[in-house]
Image 1 (spheres, rainbow, N blue to C red):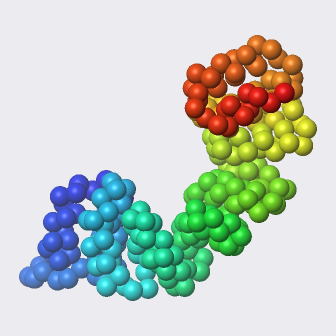
Image 2: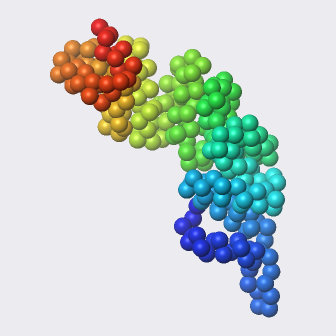
Image 3: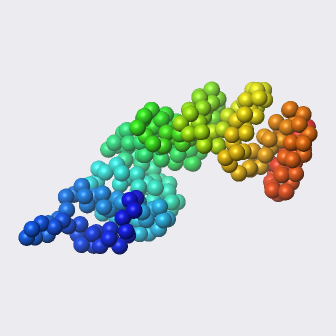
Length: 249
């Protein structure tokens, strides 16, 4: 949302979204009214004020029932309020009216992934990464890589993660996944390179520390091995993954 002061925007809406003319006040064009309601709803969503977001979204849909932007934001609201069936219906409506709507494709793919519907998530995810004008391509490629991994498409996943890093070198999840893929195919040098990218840009997790420990074991680096073991014990003492990793040879 633009940085327009909240009070000014709210007053514009309460006043009926009007424009000044020489002699009279006339309703603002429908497009301006639609944008104002969407901007207001977007601001409420960013602030996690779910209840207040619903009214301007409904008003936007009253103005233009075919607005893909309005349907996408309504889907986001439904997701936030744990209404997956309504969220899916809103995403489908958005894509019905604009099949190439990048935000709808990206969010719908992420939604399907969150529901464990990985195969279904691939279609919208593969579409959105082809949009060269989409500003979120790095994250979209990373999302695609995660979905490809879930269905066993390792080569496609690797390509997606590499593309994510090519668009944004500060994409730590992609670097971590590439490190795991390299380690699994026995390329310790490549795994270490990607792992270094990850640990310079993100906080360690039990999973990432376990990879660091495995790399230290593979390279015979006793100091690094001890360091990762201490980190796992101190940072994640109750983690089942950490305990399992520590017991590996």
